[in-house]
Structure formats: structure tokens, C-alpha cells
Image (cartoon, rainbow, N blue to C red; front, side, top):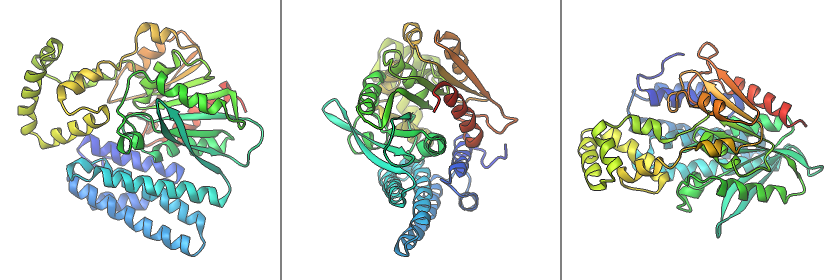
Amino acid sequence: MYSFSKHADVQFAVEDVLGGTWARAADVGEVLATVARVPDGDARAWVAQWSATAERLAGLARDAEATGHLRSAAARWLRAAAYWSTASDRGDATGEFVPLWERHRDAWDRFADLTAAVGDVAVERLEIPYEGTTLPGYLFRPGPPGEPRRTLVHTNGSDGSAVSAWTRAIADALARGWTAVTYDGPGQNAALVRQGLPFRPDWEHVLTPVVDALVARADVDPARIAVMGVSQGGYWVPRALASEHRVAAGVADPGVVDVSSTMLAQLPAHLVRLLDAGDREAFDREMGWALRLSPATRTMLQWRMRPYGVSSPFDLFTAARAYRLTPEQIAAVRCPVLVTDPEHEQFWPGQSARLAEALTCPVTLLPFTAEEGADGHCEPAAAGLRNERVLDWLDDVVPA
């Protein structure tokens, strides 16, 4: 893979936004021109330049709306949303995460509204009842209401944007006749930023209300609901499927058995001992000394703590340990499951194979390789190949 940066997180981010070109959520020239303006590793420049590209696209989108070119306007709002989301990846370094996220979400909503106005795809904003409040979501249907359709539910990961749901599920699912749904669960997007709902490990209490809302609809076939989990969603979806048995098929991209493993592997042994001993004060004191020496690590940790709803490193690592599939939960999954297995998986290496081996339901382990340009976490630069293979499997298991 061509190297855009010596920093692994920057390289991943560039590959990820380039992968969005498959679903017209980015344009190659815009991406390369923006990357060229950012000195490698400069977080402030990253935020400034991606924001500038997004703002320029937003201006062009408004121009297209004013002249009645709604398709072009929708396309530009989608790309603007992707670029503001990319800017927000480093928003903690400049204190701009929330306003950047809000710009991304406003652009996404304008894209959704204009897509509905054009009329090729029906778009409905959802309010899914959830524990005394609601979770926001979006339903995309290919055409007017009619016979109940098979429906694909996309579950995001720890930091995926609404646009990533479009590129990794919705756009290609629509092209194959699926109704496609995405939602913000606790700790994700609007549920976090606007409602203050943090992550929870027991995702069955999240997915079941989503399925409840869908099976009550006349345009959804309750026997043909599939659920896809991306990134940390590769833990949440199998966890939920252990008790939610109305789902016809599940996808984990990648498979995640233990969310905390990579986080804990980065800790020195003496900090793990403090964590095991429950010594919050000593653990946070030791971490504080280390973080003062590395502003970048401090920013990254703040970013990781936000969706867990904690401000203490001890509380973060302790909470993450609860995100672990037990053998009993894995054995309780009944529906067919597809587990992607990308080469060079950097966050949960080896866990896709572990999950696939432990599942007792019908399971398919789907490899992606560097030779194909499809390696790395969630196959960021190979959205086309990834979607073709995943949706082919879903078409076989949940036929039209």
C-alpha cells in the first residue's frame, strides 16, 4: 500500500476516506489535494485543511440547491459530511471535536433530506424507543412502500460516522434491493454528543429495541432482518445475537472476542498489576506522569475515554474489560454469521479466527489480504471488494 504518512493512525485515516470513493462519499482529487496540504503528523493542520475542503464543498452544495441541481447538491453534502468527520478525528487536539461533529451531522442530514427529495430512495429518520428516551436512526428504502422487504441493520463501531454506514453498508445494500437501517447506539454519534449516553457492553439491550421497531413496520419482513457490526460492532453484534434470535444473519467485521486486549497490551506490567489490584489512585497517578510527557497520547486517551463516559484512565481500562464475549454467549448465537478476517488487523489481531472457531452456529470466516489491497482493520481502502463479498454472502443467506 502506498504510504501517505509515517504515522499509522494518519495512514489509516487517509485509506479510510479514500475507500469512501466507492460509494461517492469522497472524490480522489479532493482527498489527495487535502492530504498534500497537511504536514505529516500535524493535527492542527489536519483539522484546518479537512475543514476547509468540507466548507468549500458545502458552499458548492448550496449553489447547486439554489439552481435546482438537487442530485449534485446531495452528492456534495455527502462528501462534505465525510470530510468534516475526517477533520473531527483530530478534533480533540484543537478542542473542536463537537462543532466538527455537528457540521458533519448537519451535512449528512442535508444529504439524507435531498436524497429523499430526489425520489430515487425513500429516506426516513427514526426515533427508536430506548429506556425512557429514543435512539436516532435512518431508514433507506429503494422505492415506494410495498411488500415487506429484507432489511440490513448497520451497527457502527466506537467512532464511525454516519457516512461510514453509507459506505460500508447502505449504498451497496440499496443497489441490491435491501432496505438499509443505521442507528446511533449508546456512545455513538448523536446518542453520545447530543444525549450523553455512554457505551454499554450488553448490546442486546440496544439491538433488541431496534429489532422491535423494525418488526412493527409493514415494510419490513420480520423473517429477513440481517445485522452487520463494524469495528467494535464486531463485539456488540455477536453479544446481542446471543439473546436476540429474531435476526436471520449476522456479520462481524472483524470478529472481536475481547475489546480490552489491545488496550491492556500497551500497558507496562506494573500498571496492569495496579489495575488488577483496583488501585485507582496509584494507577491514575502513574498514567498522569506518563501522559504529561506525551501530549499526543494524552489527546488519544481523552478521545478513547469520551464514549465510555469516564474521565479517569483507571475507569477506562476497567470498563473496557467488561467488553468480552464469554464461551456461553458465543455458544448461544444461533443464526448464520459471517466473520471477516483482514490480514494485518491492527486492533484485534487473531480474534476473527478465535470467534469463528468458537461459534457453534453456521459460520463463514472471510479473509482479506494485503495483495488485494484489502488488509487492515475493516478493509479501509477496499470498500468495493469488501462490500461485494459481504453482500454476496448476505444475498445467499437472506435471499431477495
